[in-house]
Image 1 (cartoon, rainbow, N blue to C red):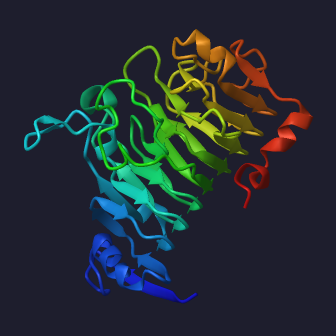
Image 2: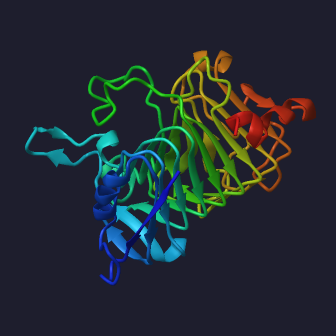
Length: 319
């Protein structure tokens, strides 16, 4: 397989000044692997990656930022309806075998109680890898697709994949920083987070947030798995949850991770869906820190050492 390299710099000293321009040029190399090198700078673009085997590579995540500010409550005058959650991503990945390294993905729209949901990244595909990347937003920062089969409210899935077949993608996040507050890692993918910092941002309200809101499909064995991660925050003590079930078969496991004092003793919330107690699978093993506890909500599983062996990267992702 050939590798084609393209170069982007906001300063204008490389062949492209915008990432979107480089992605358009990459279409001429659809049979090859395309590596797009991105120089430090702030790129205010809506990015769509729809071609397989694309890599976006920076050299410094803190200085190489892809950002936009679309938000769910924005009224789209041309169609007479709100934008909705799934038309807000700054970066939309709809492809397989994607790789990103040393980049920041932001949505700058603001707090969810002011603007609604606002995605930094919508990741829909298989074999997606993010290494040393930063994801920053407030409500719904990172959507690890697929969508659930059916929306709860009519029109709730309005957007690019509303009527598309649901694909069970697998994602890998290594040495990443992910920030937000309400359901800021959500979706139906199988995703493995290794050595990541998961930062809960403060906001108004008694409950400051929920880290995860998985919608794992019933037949899928793994949802979100966090291994050797750090759950940090600027929120008050015991004011947030590790997750809640967006759909009843939600699955999240946290292992060997440091849990900060912002997490409530019960750890997890059932989203007021008592029926999900029998179907969701929220699990922990060998966690530590002020927010760690073995006295979680009654529907939470505290894994045995033998059970925890099923949650390695190789077993979860299969690669």
